Image (tube, rainbow, N blue to C red; front, side):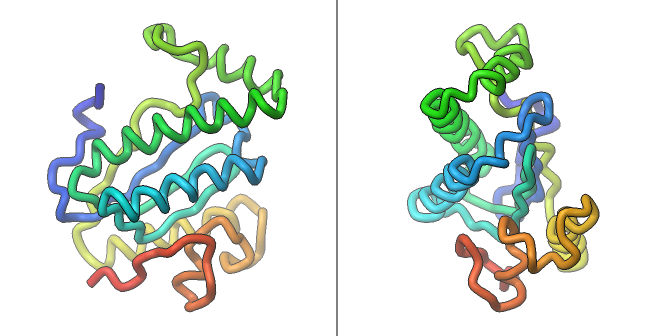
Length: 178
């Protein structure tokens, strides 16, 4: 059930969102886990009219700006699908410590599963104008720089910074939203 503060009411606007791994666990240090995110976004682009305007993926969370006709449902599907795939990956790789942590961080009311991958909610913020869009894009692209991982946003391949610099990115991004 989506909490009211995480509800998206006007689907004609893009939204800035954050998806965080429970306990801030470093799931995305595994390239295969990152690829699960990209595969899901590609599927949503093809099947659900998902428009990705920008993103960054760090070791334990991601930010994105996106729109879709039913963005709330799309984001629920995204988190559900990626959680199942990430858990399958971790089980195949025998990542026992991480699986234990995902079990320990599961909220008590989540009785339908043994593990929890994502924190609840995605904190959507409606993008209402070009100024806000640029502010959020620059924030995302500079996140790895602020954390000291790279000196230049273009050096972090898990973001849309390259797309905005007219360089090949890892996934298609809508850079002309006007």
